[in-house]
Length: 455
Ligand SMILES: Nc1ncnc2c1ncn2[C@@H]1O[C@H](COP(=O)(O)OP(=O)(O)OP(=O)(O)O)[C@@H](O)[C@H]1O
Image (cartoon, rainbow, N blue to C red; front, side, top):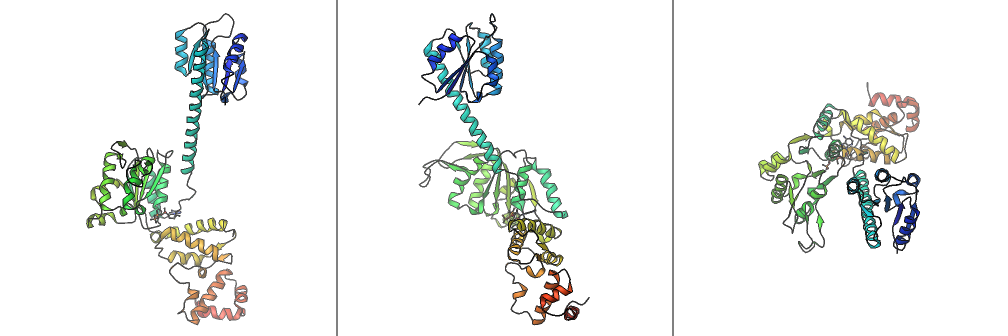
């Protein structure tokens, strides 16, 4: 099947006809124009694979400057089109000038048919590969921007402890320093690593995350450094490791404290030499990565115990960012709750759901062993389960702690108190509607409130 589009631009119609006849049997489409001005309005100029361009158009000129001018215009309008210059004068200097500017080749008039065909065919191949490379580059760019898409997870926090963290993040993000982020589970280590990458000079390259705790020991080297086909029984094809994928970008090694001691030395070696060697290969591949590590372990303690290499710790903790536990930044609990409430209200189509102040107080008193992740899940659960549009403290219960409403050892008196609080919260302190809900008179509710909730 014939492929490719060729466009011939020459003011001499005899030349146009001769070239068309010569090229037509070999290409899908061969078009001609006499006047180069028509190039500016030529439909789909970018689709043209090869353009054969005369160097002189005005009668009596042979400077070639016109050809040079039109070549530059074409190059701007269709950068992937291969342009082959045609000259009758063999002005070497001019031809060299055009080639330097990016023309693909040139042919001398009168031409040798075989030679001209070969020139146009290789110009076609070049244009095809340029287009392919560009479309691959475009794909790569799109993929990167998709992967690095601005994190829709807003980072919330106004407490002084959290503000200190964020100011540190902003200070160090633009440097290439290795960063160690520590903090309990769910404190936001990963979200902070992503923020650092987004603020860094490497933001247009990838952030590759590796959970070191999840890699089986036997696959550690292959996962991180890659392997050659046949390096071991299961290595049925070449594999690129995470270090290599992260090249020019950022590598996020999560749960670094879970790296087995015998593998820590391999990691250290790579970080020191900044080169990797694939399993089953001897070649050293240089890598250029920014390293961010995270852990909820106390690495200093692990060094003291002999379960973490001190030299590795010093290699990874040029900057140390310690994330506070949620219970140590209580001011942020209400902010985070409202943020997640809005998020889940939208997700579960409960747009008018509100939270009562007493419910927020209850959340603020909790110790949050699972930190922000636990808070997020708690709010989601409440939004799903709550039937009313006002979340009260009685709607709040924590995983692994029983809802007081279902406590087995609760007294009748406590139960009554809880029901009254719940009803009052639900109706914003309105005694009449709360009494109606409880099935008692307003006066009875008054008396019981006095008893259970003395001022
Ligand atoms: N400051 C914050 N503002 C809003 N959401 C946050 C914040 N910090 C963490 N989160 C959210 O909390 C959840 C847990 O965060 P992340 O995974 O970053 O924590 P982690 O410390 O890496 O957890 P682990 O130690 O379990 O790996 C995520 O859903 C994240 O979006």
